[in-house]
Image 1 (cartoon, rainbow, N blue to C red):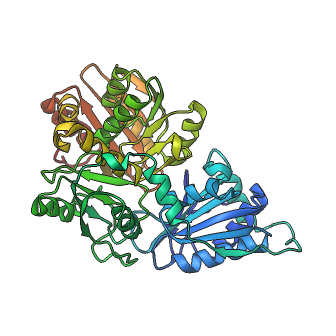
Image 2 (image 1 turned 45 degrees about the vertical axis):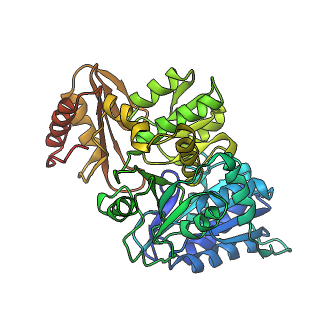
Image 3 (image 1 turned 135 degrees about the vertical axis):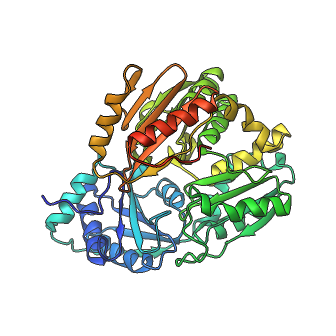
Length: 454
Protein backbone atom coordinates (compact mmCIF):
# COMPACT_ATOMS: atom_id res chain seq x y z
CA UNK A 1 0.00 0.00 0.00
CA UNK A 2 1.24 3.48 -0.83
CA UNK A 3 1.32 5.64 2.29
CA UNK A 4 -0.90 8.70 2.55
CA UNK A 5 1.29 11.62 3.59
CA UNK A 6 -1.18 13.25 5.98
CA UNK A 7 -1.46 10.14 8.19
CA UNK A 8 0.96 10.73 11.07
CA UNK A 9 1.87 8.75 14.19
CA UNK A 10 -1.22 9.72 16.18
CA UNK A 11 -3.41 11.91 14.04
CA UNK A 12 -3.98 13.17 10.49
CA UNK A 13 -2.48 16.48 9.42
CA UNK A 14 -1.43 18.23 6.22
CA UNK A 15 -1.85 21.14 3.86
CA UNK A 16 -5.25 21.78 2.30
CA UNK A 17 -5.95 20.77 -0.42
CA UNK A 18 -2.57 19.26 -1.32
CA UNK A 19 -2.50 16.63 1.45
CA UNK A 20 -5.98 16.85 2.93
CA UNK A 21 -9.16 17.50 0.94
CA UNK A 22 -12.89 16.83 0.88
CA UNK A 23 -12.57 13.59 -1.08
CA UNK A 24 -10.06 12.15 1.38
CA UNK A 25 -12.10 13.07 4.47
CA UNK A 26 -15.28 11.66 2.88
CA UNK A 27 -13.43 8.35 2.46
CA UNK A 28 -12.17 8.72 6.02
CA UNK A 29 -15.75 8.81 7.27
CA UNK A 30 -16.58 5.70 5.25
CA UNK A 31 -13.44 3.96 6.51
CA UNK A 32 -13.99 4.84 10.17
CA UNK A 33 -17.55 3.50 9.93
CA UNK A 34 -16.39 0.26 8.29
CA UNK A 35 -13.55 -0.30 10.78
CA UNK A 36 -15.20 0.63 14.08
CA UNK A 37 -19.00 0.39 13.45
CA UNK A 38 -19.63 3.39 15.71
CA UNK A 39 -23.38 3.82 15.11
CA UNK A 40 -23.10 7.49 16.07
CA UNK A 41 -20.27 10.01 16.28
CA UNK A 42 -19.56 13.49 17.59
CA UNK A 43 -18.17 15.91 15.02
CA UNK A 44 -16.40 19.12 15.98
CA UNK A 45 -14.24 21.61 14.13
CA UNK A 46 -11.91 24.52 14.79
CA UNK A 47 -12.06 27.96 13.20
CA UNK A 48 -9.76 27.32 10.23
CA UNK A 49 -11.17 28.55 6.95
CA UNK A 50 -11.06 25.05 5.45
CA UNK A 51 -12.83 23.38 8.40
CA UNK A 52 -16.52 23.87 7.39
CA UNK A 53 -16.10 22.20 3.98
CA UNK A 54 -14.10 19.33 5.47
CA UNK A 55 -16.73 18.85 8.17
CA UNK A 56 -19.51 18.62 5.58
CA UNK A 57 -17.57 16.04 3.55
CA UNK A 58 -16.76 14.00 6.64
CA UNK A 59 -20.38 14.08 7.75
CA UNK A 60 -21.48 12.83 4.30
CA UNK A 61 -19.05 9.94 4.59
CA UNK A 62 -20.50 8.91 7.93
CA UNK A 63 -24.11 9.40 6.89
CA UNK A 64 -23.60 7.41 3.68
CA UNK A 65 -22.34 4.61 5.93
CA UNK A 66 -25.47 4.70 8.08
CA UNK A 67 -23.78 6.53 10.99
CA UNK A 68 -25.64 9.28 12.86
CA UNK A 69 -23.65 12.50 13.19
CA UNK A 70 -23.98 14.72 16.26
CA UNK A 71 -22.48 18.00 15.07
CA UNK A 72 -21.30 20.09 18.03
CA UNK A 73 -19.96 22.83 15.76
CA UNK A 74 -16.97 25.07 16.47
CA UNK A 75 -15.27 23.84 19.62
CA UNK A 76 -12.01 22.73 21.19
CA UNK A 77 -10.76 19.19 20.79
CA UNK A 78 -11.48 18.37 24.42
CA UNK A 79 -15.18 19.12 23.88
CA UNK A 80 -15.29 16.24 21.37
CA UNK A 81 -13.58 14.04 23.97
CA UNK A 82 -16.30 15.09 26.42
CA UNK A 83 -19.18 14.66 23.97
CA UNK A 84 -18.50 11.01 23.18
CA UNK A 85 -19.01 9.57 26.71
CA UNK A 86 -21.44 12.32 27.76
CA UNK A 87 -23.81 11.50 24.88
CA UNK A 88 -22.93 7.77 24.81
CA UNK A 89 -21.70 7.96 21.20
CA UNK A 90 -19.60 5.41 19.34
CA UNK A 91 -16.80 7.75 18.33
CA UNK A 92 -15.64 11.32 17.88
CA UNK A 93 -13.80 13.33 15.24
CA UNK A 94 -12.25 16.76 15.62
CA UNK A 95 -11.18 18.72 12.56
CA UNK A 96 -8.19 20.81 13.60
CA UNK A 97 -4.53 21.44 12.91
CA UNK A 98 -4.05 23.02 16.34
CA UNK A 99 -1.01 25.34 16.16
CA UNK A 100 -0.01 24.76 12.53
CA UNK A 101 -0.11 27.57 9.91
CA UNK A 102 -3.47 28.60 8.37
CA UNK A 103 -3.04 26.50 5.22
CA UNK A 104 -2.96 23.31 7.32
CA UNK A 105 -5.77 21.26 8.75
CA UNK A 106 -6.06 17.87 10.39
CA UNK A 107 -8.22 15.29 12.14
CA UNK A 108 -8.09 13.72 15.61
CA UNK A 109 -10.06 10.52 16.12
CA UNK A 110 -11.45 8.64 19.11
CA UNK A 111 -13.64 5.57 19.49
CA UNK A 112 -16.28 4.87 22.14
CA UNK A 113 -15.44 6.21 25.62
CA UNK A 114 -12.98 8.55 23.81
CA UNK A 115 -10.42 5.77 23.36
CA UNK A 116 -7.78 7.21 21.01
CA UNK A 117 -7.12 5.97 17.50
CA UNK A 118 -3.38 6.08 16.83
CA UNK A 119 -0.77 4.30 14.74
CA UNK A 120 -0.77 1.49 17.30
CA UNK A 121 -4.54 1.22 17.59
CA UNK A 122 -6.24 1.41 14.23
CA UNK A 123 -4.93 4.45 12.39
CA UNK A 124 -2.81 2.35 10.02
CA UNK A 125 -5.78 0.09 9.24
CA UNK A 126 -7.88 3.18 8.61
CA UNK A 127 -5.19 4.53 6.27
CA UNK A 128 -5.33 1.27 4.28
CA UNK A 129 -9.11 1.48 3.88
CA UNK A 130 -8.93 5.11 2.77
CA UNK A 131 -6.15 4.33 0.29
CA UNK A 132 -7.99 1.34 -1.20
CA UNK A 133 -11.27 3.26 -1.43
CA UNK A 134 -13.16 -0.02 -1.14
CA UNK A 135 -15.99 0.13 1.39
CA UNK A 136 -19.02 -2.03 2.15
CA UNK A 137 -22.17 -1.18 0.16
CA UNK A 138 -24.12 1.71 1.75
CA UNK A 139 -26.85 0.50 4.11
CA UNK A 140 -30.52 1.10 3.35
CA UNK A 141 -30.80 3.61 6.16
CA UNK A 142 -28.77 6.77 5.74
CA UNK A 143 -27.36 8.28 8.91
CA UNK A 144 -28.86 11.43 10.38
CA UNK A 145 -27.23 14.81 11.02
CA UNK A 146 -28.09 16.72 14.19
CA UNK A 147 -26.61 19.98 15.46
CA UNK A 148 -26.28 20.14 19.23
CA UNK A 149 -24.95 22.65 21.74
CA UNK A 150 -23.31 20.92 24.71
CA UNK A 151 -21.35 23.92 25.97
CA UNK A 152 -23.22 24.33 29.25
CA UNK A 153 -22.80 20.65 30.13
CA UNK A 154 -19.11 20.87 29.25
CA UNK A 155 -18.60 23.94 31.46
CA UNK A 156 -20.25 22.13 34.37
CA UNK A 157 -17.86 19.21 33.80
CA UNK A 158 -14.83 21.52 33.85
CA UNK A 159 -15.91 23.38 36.98
CA UNK A 160 -16.29 20.03 38.74
CA UNK A 161 -12.48 19.89 39.02
CA UNK A 162 -12.33 22.85 41.44
CA UNK A 163 -14.19 24.46 44.30
CA UNK A 164 -15.37 27.66 42.65
CA UNK A 165 -16.24 29.21 46.02
CA UNK A 166 -12.57 28.92 47.09
CA UNK A 167 -11.22 30.93 44.15
CA UNK A 168 -10.07 34.36 45.25
CA UNK A 169 -10.44 37.45 43.03
CA UNK A 170 -7.37 37.09 40.83
CA UNK A 171 -6.55 39.18 37.77
CA UNK A 172 -5.86 36.99 34.72
CA UNK A 173 -4.60 37.86 31.26
CA UNK A 174 -6.25 35.37 28.88
CA UNK A 175 -4.97 35.09 25.30
CA UNK A 176 -7.30 33.13 23.02
CA UNK A 177 -4.92 33.36 20.06
CA UNK A 178 -7.88 34.01 17.69
CA UNK A 179 -8.61 30.28 18.01
CA UNK A 180 -11.50 28.44 19.64
CA UNK A 181 -10.67 29.29 23.26
CA UNK A 182 -12.05 32.84 23.50
CA UNK A 183 -15.80 32.14 23.46
CA UNK A 184 -15.49 29.30 25.99
CA UNK A 185 -13.23 31.26 28.36
CA UNK A 186 -15.73 34.12 28.11
CA UNK A 187 -18.45 31.84 29.45
CA UNK A 188 -16.14 30.36 32.10
CA UNK A 189 -15.30 33.89 33.27
CA UNK A 190 -18.97 34.48 34.03
CA UNK A 191 -18.78 31.67 36.59
CA UNK A 192 -15.46 32.62 38.19
CA UNK A 193 -14.60 35.46 40.62
CA UNK A 194 -11.70 36.66 38.46
CA UNK A 195 -10.96 39.84 36.57
CA UNK A 196 -10.23 38.81 32.98
CA UNK A 197 -8.01 40.85 30.66
CA UNK A 198 -8.91 39.54 27.20
CA UNK A 199 -6.47 39.22 24.29
CA UNK A 200 -7.31 37.99 20.77
CA UNK A 201 -10.62 36.42 21.86
CA UNK A 202 -12.27 36.72 18.46
CA UNK A 203 -12.03 33.45 16.48
CA UNK A 204 -10.37 34.14 13.13
CA UNK A 205 -8.99 31.38 10.90
CA UNK A 206 -6.63 33.82 9.18
CA UNK A 207 -4.81 34.23 12.53
CA UNK A 208 -4.15 37.99 12.29
CA UNK A 209 -1.88 37.93 15.35
CA UNK A 210 0.13 34.88 14.25
CA UNK A 211 -0.52 31.17 14.56
CA UNK A 212 -1.72 30.28 18.07
CA UNK A 213 1.43 28.53 19.21
CA UNK A 214 2.74 30.00 22.49
CA UNK A 215 5.76 27.69 22.33
CA UNK A 216 7.19 30.11 19.77
CA UNK A 217 9.01 32.87 21.71
CA UNK A 218 7.74 35.56 19.33
CA UNK A 219 4.16 34.56 20.12
CA UNK A 220 4.61 35.10 23.86
CA UNK A 221 5.21 38.84 23.81
CA UNK A 222 1.58 39.97 23.72
CA UNK A 223 0.67 37.92 26.80
CA UNK A 224 3.84 38.83 28.69
CA UNK A 225 3.42 42.56 28.08
CA UNK A 226 -0.25 42.46 29.00
CA UNK A 227 0.52 40.76 32.33
CA UNK A 228 2.98 43.51 33.23
CA UNK A 229 0.74 46.30 31.96
CA UNK A 230 -2.31 45.05 33.86
CA UNK A 231 -0.43 44.03 37.01
CA UNK A 232 -2.04 40.61 36.60
CA UNK A 233 -1.53 37.60 38.84
CA UNK A 234 -0.87 35.37 35.85
CA UNK A 235 -1.23 35.04 32.10
CA UNK A 236 -2.67 32.10 30.17
CA UNK A 237 -2.48 31.48 26.41
CA UNK A 238 -4.10 28.67 24.45
CA UNK A 239 -3.31 27.02 21.14
CA UNK A 240 -5.84 26.88 18.29
CA UNK A 241 -7.99 24.01 19.56
CA UNK A 242 -7.27 24.80 23.24
CA UNK A 243 -6.13 21.33 24.21
CA UNK A 244 -2.96 23.02 25.48
CA UNK A 245 -2.57 26.07 27.70
CA UNK A 246 0.60 27.94 28.58
CA UNK A 247 1.29 29.98 31.70
CA UNK A 248 3.06 33.26 32.48
CA UNK A 249 3.85 34.31 36.02
CA UNK A 250 3.09 37.69 37.57
CA UNK A 251 6.40 39.01 36.19
CA UNK A 252 5.32 38.20 32.64
CA UNK A 253 7.82 35.34 32.40
CA UNK A 254 6.87 32.27 30.37
CA UNK A 255 6.80 29.07 32.43
CA UNK A 256 8.11 25.92 30.78
CA UNK A 257 5.39 23.27 30.54
CA UNK A 258 7.76 20.87 32.30
CA UNK A 259 7.39 22.76 35.57
CA UNK A 260 3.62 22.96 35.23
CA UNK A 261 3.60 19.14 35.03
CA UNK A 262 5.39 19.04 38.38
CA UNK A 263 3.06 21.63 39.87
CA UNK A 264 -0.09 19.79 38.80
CA UNK A 265 1.27 16.36 39.73
CA UNK A 266 1.98 17.53 43.27
CA UNK A 267 -1.44 19.15 43.58
CA UNK A 268 -3.23 16.05 42.28
CA UNK A 269 -1.31 13.72 44.60
CA UNK A 270 -2.09 15.88 47.61
CA UNK A 271 -5.77 15.20 46.97
CA UNK A 272 -5.28 11.59 45.82
CA UNK A 273 -2.13 10.11 47.46
CA UNK A 274 -0.44 6.97 46.19
CA UNK A 275 -1.61 7.24 42.58
CA UNK A 276 0.32 6.79 39.33
CA UNK A 277 1.47 9.79 37.28
CA UNK A 278 2.41 9.47 33.60
CA UNK A 279 5.20 11.57 32.09
CA UNK A 280 7.11 11.70 28.82
CA UNK A 281 10.87 11.05 28.33
CA UNK A 282 12.01 14.48 27.13
CA UNK A 283 12.48 16.00 30.60
CA UNK A 284 12.02 13.76 33.62
CA UNK A 285 14.04 14.51 36.75
CA UNK A 286 11.81 17.20 38.24
CA UNK A 287 8.63 15.22 37.64
CA UNK A 288 10.06 11.97 39.05
CA UNK A 289 11.39 13.78 42.13
CA UNK A 290 8.09 15.52 42.85
CA UNK A 291 5.93 12.45 42.26
CA UNK A 292 8.05 10.21 44.47
CA UNK A 293 8.29 12.92 47.11
CA UNK A 294 4.50 13.19 47.17
CA UNK A 295 4.09 9.42 47.55
CA UNK A 296 3.08 8.72 43.96
CA UNK A 297 4.48 6.42 41.29
CA UNK A 298 5.99 7.98 38.13
CA UNK A 299 5.40 6.02 34.92
CA UNK A 300 7.33 6.76 31.71
CA UNK A 301 5.45 6.80 28.40
CA UNK A 302 6.21 7.54 24.78
CA UNK A 303 5.49 11.13 23.76
CA UNK A 304 2.23 11.95 22.01
CA UNK A 305 -1.39 12.35 23.04
CA UNK A 306 -2.60 8.98 21.75
CA UNK A 307 0.28 7.08 23.39
CA UNK A 308 -0.12 8.89 26.72
CA UNK A 309 -3.87 8.23 26.79
CA UNK A 310 -3.37 4.55 26.09
CA UNK A 311 -0.84 4.31 28.90
CA UNK A 312 -3.11 6.30 31.22
CA UNK A 313 -5.89 3.75 30.71
CA UNK A 314 -3.54 0.79 31.11
CA UNK A 315 -2.18 2.10 34.42
CA UNK A 316 -5.44 3.74 35.57
CA UNK A 317 -3.25 6.78 36.19
CA UNK A 318 -4.58 9.83 38.01
CA UNK A 319 -2.79 12.40 35.85
CA UNK A 320 -0.38 12.57 32.94
CA UNK A 321 1.68 15.50 31.74
CA UNK A 322 3.92 16.34 28.81
CA UNK A 323 6.39 19.20 28.74
CA UNK A 324 4.67 20.36 25.53
CA UNK A 325 1.70 21.43 27.73
CA UNK A 326 -0.60 18.47 27.19
CA UNK A 327 -2.21 17.54 30.51
CA UNK A 328 -4.33 14.38 30.93
CA UNK A 329 -6.80 13.52 33.68
CA UNK A 330 -8.43 10.25 34.65
CA UNK A 331 -11.64 12.10 35.52
CA UNK A 332 -11.59 13.66 32.05
CA UNK A 333 -11.93 10.26 30.37
CA UNK A 334 -8.11 9.91 30.42
CA UNK A 335 -7.98 12.75 27.87
CA UNK A 336 -6.02 15.97 27.65
CA UNK A 337 -7.43 19.38 28.43
CA UNK A 338 -6.26 22.97 28.16
CA UNK A 339 -9.05 24.27 30.37
CA UNK A 340 -8.69 22.02 33.42
CA UNK A 341 -5.03 23.09 34.07
CA UNK A 342 -6.14 26.72 33.86
CA UNK A 343 -8.76 26.12 36.53
CA UNK A 344 -6.39 24.04 38.69
CA UNK A 345 -3.73 26.76 38.65
CA UNK A 346 -6.36 29.33 39.69
CA UNK A 347 -7.27 26.99 42.53
CA UNK A 348 -3.63 26.51 43.56
CA UNK A 349 -2.92 30.24 43.60
CA UNK A 350 -6.02 30.80 45.70
CA UNK A 351 -5.10 28.04 48.15
CA UNK A 352 -1.40 28.82 48.52
CA UNK A 353 -1.71 32.60 48.64
CA UNK A 354 1.67 32.89 46.91
CA UNK A 355 2.61 34.29 43.51
CA UNK A 356 2.97 31.80 40.67
CA UNK A 357 6.70 32.53 40.32
CA UNK A 358 7.35 31.34 43.88
CA UNK A 359 5.43 28.10 43.32
CA UNK A 360 7.80 27.03 40.55
CA UNK A 361 11.01 28.78 41.68
CA UNK A 362 12.52 25.78 43.46
CA UNK A 363 11.84 23.48 40.49
CA UNK A 364 13.59 25.85 38.10
CA UNK A 365 16.60 26.12 40.39
CA UNK A 366 16.92 22.40 41.05
CA UNK A 367 16.39 21.28 37.45
CA UNK A 368 17.21 23.99 34.89
CA UNK A 369 16.40 23.11 31.28
CA UNK A 370 17.47 24.15 27.80
CA UNK A 371 13.96 24.60 26.52
CA UNK A 372 13.04 22.46 23.51
CA UNK A 373 15.33 23.22 20.56
CA UNK A 374 13.97 22.24 17.14
CA UNK A 375 16.23 21.72 14.17
CA UNK A 376 15.95 20.41 10.64
CA UNK A 377 18.40 17.62 9.80
CA UNK A 378 18.73 15.66 6.57
CA UNK A 379 18.63 12.21 8.16
CA UNK A 380 17.28 11.99 11.74
CA UNK A 381 18.31 8.34 12.09
CA UNK A 382 21.93 9.10 11.25
CA UNK A 383 21.87 12.08 13.61
CA UNK A 384 20.65 9.89 16.50
CA UNK A 385 23.34 7.28 15.83
CA UNK A 386 26.02 9.98 15.72
CA UNK A 387 24.92 11.44 19.06
CA UNK A 388 24.80 8.02 20.70
CA UNK A 389 28.29 7.12 19.47
CA UNK A 390 29.79 10.33 20.92
CA UNK A 391 28.42 10.00 24.44
CA UNK A 392 29.86 6.89 26.05
CA UNK A 393 28.43 5.55 29.27
CA UNK A 394 25.32 6.85 30.95
CA UNK A 395 21.92 5.19 31.20
CA UNK A 396 20.29 4.81 27.80
CA UNK A 397 16.56 4.78 27.10
CA UNK A 398 14.86 4.39 23.73
CA UNK A 399 11.24 4.92 24.76
CA UNK A 400 11.08 7.89 22.40
CA UNK A 401 14.15 8.78 20.37
CA UNK A 402 17.33 8.65 22.46
CA UNK A 403 17.71 9.60 26.11
CA UNK A 404 21.06 9.39 27.88
CA UNK A 405 21.33 10.09 31.61
CA UNK A 406 24.53 10.90 33.51
CA UNK A 407 24.96 11.79 37.18
CA UNK A 408 24.64 15.56 36.74
CA UNK A 409 22.92 15.96 33.38
CA UNK A 410 20.73 14.20 30.85
CA UNK A 411 19.28 14.82 27.42
CA UNK A 412 16.68 13.52 25.00
CA UNK A 413 16.81 13.90 21.24
CA UNK A 414 13.93 12.62 19.12
CA UNK A 415 12.35 13.04 15.70
CA UNK A 416 9.03 14.88 15.74
CA UNK A 417 5.94 12.78 15.05
CA UNK A 418 4.15 15.69 13.39
CA UNK A 419 6.83 17.83 11.71
CA UNK A 420 10.14 17.22 9.83
CA UNK A 421 12.23 18.18 12.84
CA UNK A 422 14.65 16.82 15.39
CA UNK A 423 13.86 17.99 18.94
CA UNK A 424 16.50 18.37 21.66
CA UNK A 425 16.00 18.81 25.41
CA UNK A 426 18.75 19.05 28.03
CA UNK A 427 18.50 19.30 31.82
CA UNK A 428 20.91 19.28 34.75
CA UNK A 429 20.84 18.96 38.49
CA UNK A 430 21.00 22.63 39.40
CA UNK A 431 23.98 23.50 37.17
CA UNK A 432 23.27 26.20 34.58
CA UNK A 433 26.90 26.38 33.49
CA UNK A 434 26.91 22.67 32.70
CA UNK A 435 23.52 23.07 31.00
CA UNK A 436 24.88 25.73 28.64
CA UNK A 437 28.03 23.74 27.92
CA UNK A 438 26.27 20.47 27.11
CA UNK A 439 23.60 22.16 25.03
CA UNK A 440 26.29 23.90 22.99
CA UNK A 441 28.19 20.61 22.61
CA UNK A 442 25.12 18.75 21.34
CA UNK A 443 24.16 21.51 18.93
CA UNK A 444 27.69 21.63 17.54
CA UNK A 445 27.62 17.87 17.06
CA UNK A 446 24.40 18.22 15.10
CA UNK A 447 25.88 21.02 13.01
CA UNK A 448 23.69 23.74 14.47
CA UNK A 449 24.48 27.13 15.93
CA UNK A 450 24.28 27.68 19.65
CA UNK A 451 20.96 28.83 21.08
CA UNK A 452 20.31 30.82 24.21
CA UNK A 453 19.65 28.43 27.06
CA UNK A 454 16.61 29.36 29.14
